[in-house]
Amino acid sequence: MTSLITLRAATPADIPLLRHWDEQPHVISANPNDPWNWEADLATSADWQEHWIAELDGRPIGFIEIIDPAREESHYWGDVPTHLRALDIWIGEASDLGRGYGTAMMQLALTHCFADPAVTAVLVDPLANNTRAHRFYERQGFKFLQHQRFGEDNCSVFRLSRAEWQQAMPGQIPTPSASQSPTPPG
Image (cartoon, rainbow, N blue to C red; front, side, top):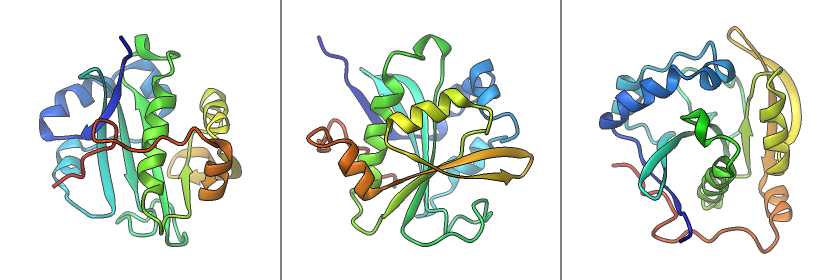
């Protein structure tokens, strides 16, 4: 039997699980200075952000946040062009790392981002010292753009353009189906 990873909108019912994942050492080390306010984040229905839970055959395994960085309220990304998306992605439990789930989650997230024809590129901002994440993003086709300080964190910004995504995945770009594509929140 083939396992299927799907995305569904995160809901307030996921808050205990998200808090648990926030306490995992591998999540803390990748994102030590980014406290999430899950109640506020999941209660917000802003059209510039999406929160997804990745599930493996119905079992929650990870989280994805997709934002429009030009419209995000805190201006975390600073002055950026329109038509971009930025994402955060992580696996919740250490036992699920290194099994290809992150790659499948990323492919679904990128397919979702680029389903909007106006989106020209996707940004990620792993910590500068998180070389494992850098290699992961590079395997997905992302290119290093610059080092940038976000709050207390020294980060490496990576960018994947629509053209680079299409070139990196010729013939492998998944076509979203009802079971694979996220269901829009709301």
